[in-house]
Image (tube, rainbow, N blue to C red):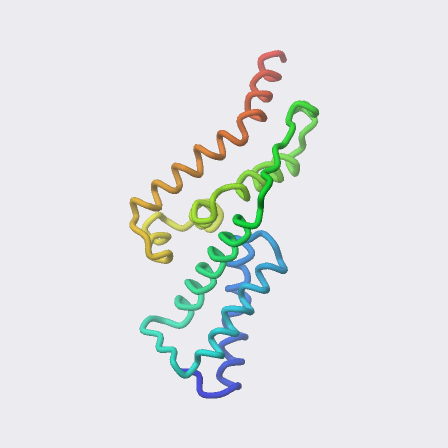
Length: 173
């Protein structure tokens, strides 16, 4: 498939930016995203003689990056022993600015199980439909729908203290 270094460099330059964006959206960490994309390209180079892509190369690389991100997140979740809890009572919701709310939501998304997080991110941040997500991840559409439902339930649960405080303050005003 890849005959020489020049062909590989061309593929790298053509696809790197888009693959990095995909990895960054899923991992929300620049260095990890760079590592994952580099790893995918390294495997592509190492296995270039045995590799046969039956679809388009861009789609193959994107799916490889998504799978590598899933593996990375799975490994990270196994390494994470403590789950932090956020104390929402120390600061009233009137003091919470948009950036802080966004950070809380990002932290909550980060605590989702790896597959659930990937599916939620692809759906809500990349705007992909359930069938598109299912096709990319090799899952059924029903599994994607179930994982999105689980993500929303878990996010509501994690953000419940903040939401309850917001309602309480709103009722006092």
